[in-house]
Image (tube, rainbow, N blue to C red; front, side, top):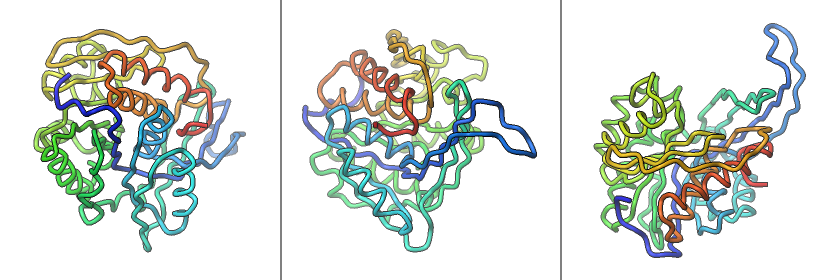
Length: 306
C-alpha cells in the first residue's frame, strides 16, 4: 500500500457531514400523486459521522469534525459519544442541521433526498491544528468536496496531515453529486490536494470517474492508475476489489446478508477498513474487515451501528 503507515493505536480523524436521517422503508413502489405506506424512523446519520461510528465500533479511537445546527446539536453530540466517537462539532447558529430523507425500497436499496444545511458551511475557519494530535489517518467524506468552503477546508487539512506524515483517504460519497460537480474536475481536485493514498468509491462512483461502461476490474484499474493510489472499490453484496497503480490486487468477499436497509453500508465498510489499517492490517485483511461491517450494516435500519 502506498503512503505512510501509521503506528498502531493512532487515532482516526474524519471530516465531513453530520446529518439527521429520516428513513422511510416502503415495501411497495412509490405511488405518484397519492400515499404509499411506509415504516419511518429518525436516526443520526451522515457519511462522515457514520464512518466515524463504524470505525469506533471496530475498535479505533475516532475524532469527528463536522458542523451541526443548534436545533439538534445536543442530540447529535450525545449519539456520537454513545457510539465511542469524540465529537468536534461546530454549532451553526443560523443554519439547521443537514437532513436526508432516505427512501428505502423492499430490496433494501435507498434513494436520498438531501438538504445539506449546516454541513454545507463546514470550512477552514472550523479547522484547528490540534485535531491531528495523536492521529494516524485523516479521512475526508466526498460531500465535503462539493462546496467551496469544504474544498478550502480539505486543502488546509490535507496539507497539515502531509506535514505530519499522516495518510489521507477520500470517499467520493455520491455518484449524483459527482456527475453534477464533474468527474474530471473531481479528479483534478484530488490531484491538487496531494497526499491522498486511499480512495473508497462504490461501483457507480467509480464508473462516473472512469468509463460508464467499465466493469469493476476495469474501473478499479483505471482509477488507481489515474490517482496513483490504492483503490478499495465497494461492490455491495459482492464484496470489494482492491487495485493499486493500475493493477488489480484481488477481490475480497463479503459475508452473506439479507438486506433491510443499505443506508450506511459503504460507510461501515470504510470504517472497518480504516480501523483495521490503523491496527496494522494489510489492505486485503482490512478490506475483509470492512466487508464484515458492511454486511452488519444492511440488516439494521439507519446508517450507524446499533
